[in-house]
Image 1 (cartoon, rainbow over the protein chains, first blue to last red):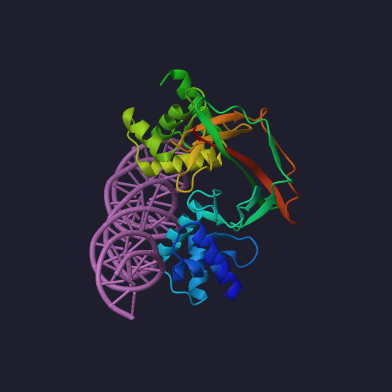
Image 2: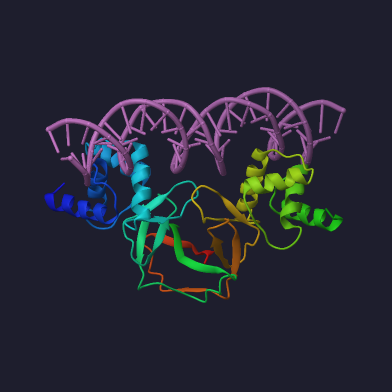
Length: 137
Length: 137
DNA sequence: GTCCCTCTTTAGAACCATTCTAATATATTG
DNA sequence: CAATATATTAGAATGGTTCTAAAGAGGGAC
């Protein structure tokens, strides 16, 4: 991990009032080093271990939840039985490939949802999620 | 369950090439007796037991999957960690209440999604799911 | 630097919804 | 009604996620 990446990670953690522990810094490094990523707790854990970062699966879960809480990540619900996370927290939606479980971003500018009814009394819209399920033709 | 409901259930099962066993007929009765419903395997099992229908949880799971396969039900993915089913198989979308986990239908005529990009080469769009997440304001 | 207090990490157990197994029961066909 | 295929079942297994309680590490005060 480059010096620059580590500093960025530290800043992010500081902003979120999370102690920059070795594990959090390393995971943030993997997550935010370059480009946007889609991942699961298991896949990030495997990647960390593969990269020689000693971290337990429990910590990966904790960290993903804390980062999500801090607005550094967002959860994507496309599959009952697996939590996906996305490092792209901007306005966008997803293609979900039912064959291999992969996700592809759809830019927020591209897609538009019209005609959402008024929510029931006392309720407010939190988020509108669009999942375009695709499969090999 | 009324005579009419039982007959309807039998017809549905016959059309799906599923033997009209006591359990399937009874569950179909609960599911399609009136109006559209949202449910989980656990909730349907509890409802069946409460109604004096002896059926195991495994059978409820089997039956829900078979009915889904047969196009009598559709799955709704709104929560990582729970399978929801919907007896409304027509074109529509959902409000999902994050406070209590309930679903509310949004008619297909009301809502429109525009600007979906072309899927990657060799892939075809299977379905477009919109989930409007709401919570108590 | 050292002490202390708090927050964090961890291994492993617990959890929970779902799926599997293999024995038993039921529907259908002839 | 017998023979065969299909369904049901209890309970075990699975797999992803969360919890627990004990050990470890960060950070401020001095």
